[in-house]
Length: 107
Image (cartoon, rainbow, N blue to C red; front, top):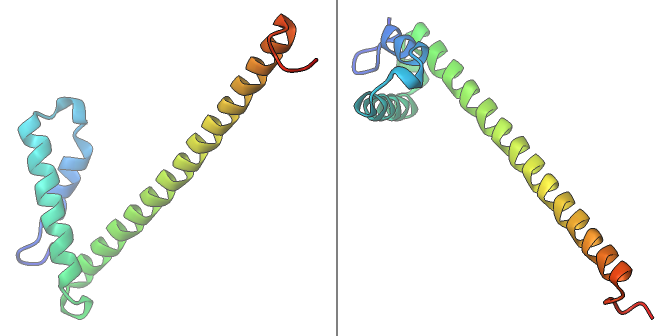
């Protein structure tokens, strides 16, 4: 059971289990708004004033948020590396083409 003024665990589960493709735009906006409001309420409510189930739920969400942020960071790093490699290969191919065509400064 969730604390007073907080989103119920049943509602959270239902929102998370419903595929995004089956939600209307209104549902998506509503889910996002209620999730942000619940997250804010959890952040300002001291842990010693939360029920044990609410505290556990907030900790689980926080751990999931951290894992998601870390995953994004790794994904961004991989994208940057791939882009850098792509640029290097493109430059090398351009220089090779210039060399073969004789338009480079390699006399």
